[in-house]
Image (tube, rainbow, N blue to C red; front, side):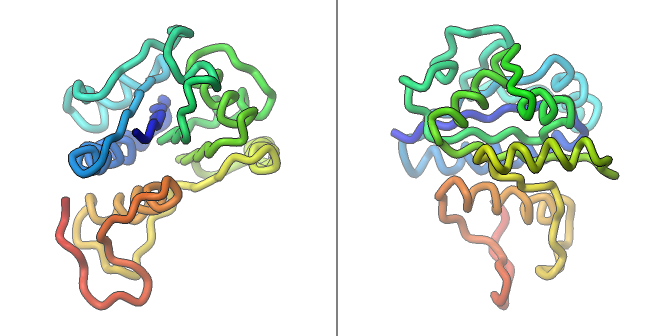
Length: 191
């Protein structure tokens, strides 16, 4: 069974996390997949404000201070973690090696175990400190995948636009999903 962690922080861009969870819900029907979800203190407020919908209830949801969550230890062998959206506060704590909640602890586990950590920052503009923190995390092994949608597929709605980022995350996680890609002629069906 594949095991993943999805961290949702309080940065704007909850729609990216919502779409990732939709894709993972669909993929879970096709293959065994365990997904642990953890939210920062501000994430529920931002989620409700931006999406006007309840938080997903069909994934294992862990509290921010739940250090008994399986992915708080490398021995649980979670293979990857995605922080989506990833706030610059979270980036800063990770770059400094601060592990003061379940999100930063789980990310630290991914880095120390040399497992995949994908950070999807959603902030603009970036100051030098942000850039230095992102560089530091890249040097430590994290993959920095900014929420920068692409337009070559001519997305016709916000879901298709958001998917240009989310599908890149899924690619990095090793999932193969049908989607418009560079050089493809026709868009695929939405999920």
